[in-house]
Image 1 (spheres, rainbow, N blue to C red):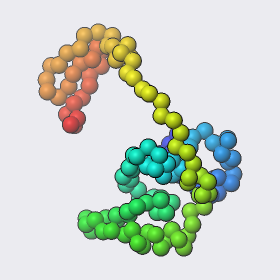
Image 2 (cartoon, helix red, strand yellow):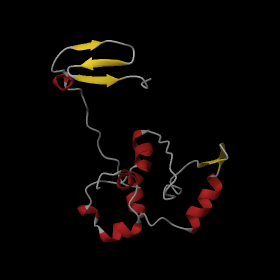
Image 3 (cartoon, rainbow, N blue to C red):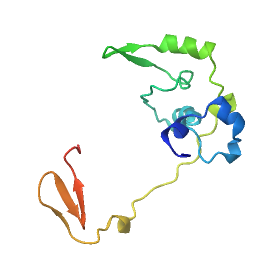
Length: 136
């Protein structure tokens, strides 16, 4: 449960009060989304229907209404101002942290047998069939 989607995205004020930051195994994305842009230049597009905690951090809020996109930024800002999320300001302005260099371990990609393709929809990677029908 500690690494489920909800815990990854937010930690509300009540959970922050119950579980001290040093005891929390993950850092919620809401604490990193601002520094991710300001320090690393990486924009974020989110599709969320279950929390308004990101309203105060969002540059733009779009709502789907009857299959049409509607700009709700001003309304979201009013809601955020009247109902603070409880996220401490220090958490919103935290340092993003270092990004470690990554590289593919070639031995991690090695199959235990032959790699082959029998059709356009799948490949055999050793004994594993990889379905490609919906891959783009």
